[in-house]
Image 1 (cartoon, one colour):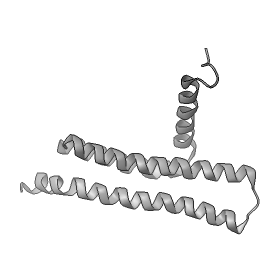
Image 2: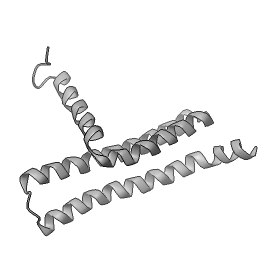
Image 3: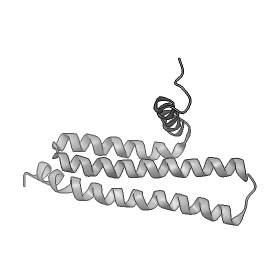
Image 4: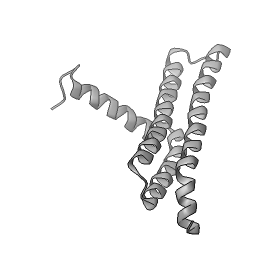
Length: 125
């Protein structure tokens, strides 16, 4: 039985389908998934503190959110204005730039959070 249109269940279903579509059909996500898996595996191995986990999860969530927004803009543009237009190209570049900025910030967060305990674990310091 499908959820009632407009209900929270229907909204959650649509959101879940959107994430599923993005992960299943967009190659950009396949760049981030191995990195995410490695970060989670290393964090688990290091037995990080809850606040460190929270920071990493927020960084990962920020990257995935930016990718979802970028993907939605790309799809919308391809339908609304499929012809090339310089301004639309700039808008798409800006959206991709947002993904780059949050990805670099997330990488910095990962290094700040993971490097000290990793160094200590590997070198007994």
